[in-house]
Image (tube, rainbow, N blue to C red; front, side, top):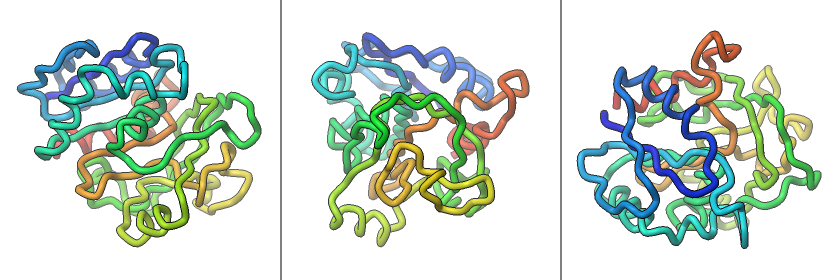
Length: 227
């Protein structure tokens, strides 16, 4: 599977993503500047974290209007895979590729800390190397990671099994303490209806090698590259 990483002005997590994808695929990903529209030859597109356009207006709002996003929409519509992490998740919601929005953290503070995520399903291209219900550690680094959607949308996500990950305790329990940014129903990541687009706030790419302190996030990338 050939991957491409989409770069916007202000993105700063692309090198971490290169390491994760290269470890999983055995080949370097293609770097795609935000003005490019030719995504031919790519199977998966990754929108990494950072502060696209300085987070002006709303996080991800300006990046969602970049020329490349029209091509990303077409890629997703024809069944290509798209992964958005942190700011990438914000961009995907602003672009309408995923439902909901990412609001200011409940405590109105930037959070930089590890969290634990529970895998809600293991039958997708992103999670086949996990087990359903398994818990893994991932760093979080955001000020606007509070996932919000109206009750109807949240019920639809639950009913259609489109919640990818939840914030939980190390034992896998949903608790207020584990949900540090205040996300609705402790949701940390969601899928598109066709399961080809995934967005999540924490950074699994920052735990893919023992030198990083662990390999908790590696199964996400090995799953995707094996899809």
